Length: 77
Image (cartoon, rainbow, N blue to C red; front, side):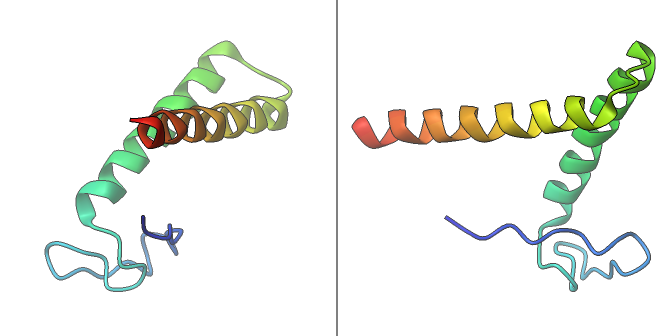
């Protein structure tokens, strides 16, 4: 496994064509992460959630639980 390094922002991002030279993540990972975040933002906007913090906390918690569950399943094999 590797450690996730958050993006420092588009202004800080410099790349070598494959990886960001600031955070070290591959460009494909950055693009996919942005796509998923944009989708969640669109969902929150279209639903007009006023309790945005609760929505984002719920999503973060569910993602973490799902990944942990899948990893546990992989370890049992």
